[in-house]
Length: 159
Image 1 (cartoon, one colour):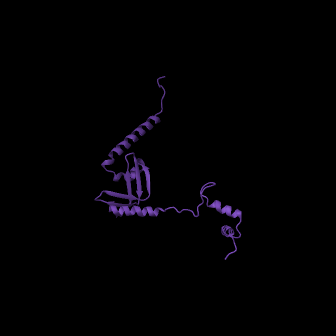
Image 2: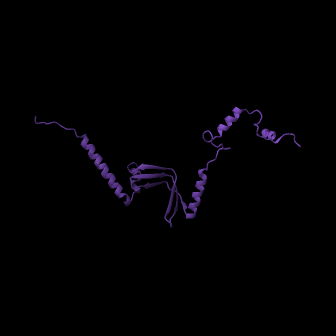
């Protein structure tokens, strides 16, 4: 039978370990505080989900759709109606031809149609004819504007 009272046992159990001062305890308490004064302390830092879990979910969904990888594709260019091109170099391409689903993944760059035109000229089809006409018209007006600026004004030679 112990001679200590309940209050004394409680005080001893809640006492800090030996060698720890109030300053050290205050410093430790501040390091785990998530907000300002009066906010809840947390015991450990929360670990965030990695993107690997998201990638696994995506791959599982794609597998359900029945896509299969297509190899040996060096580049993919997605030409938008607003005049930009999304360019993928060495992408990972997967497709399900019966359900008309194509998945292109990898590093992409968004460029203007004019910048990438020399590289993709042989890939263009009739659906891009309107964009080529607009580009030619735009370049024609720019060339005409430059010619008008370059012609110097001359004086009257009769006098």
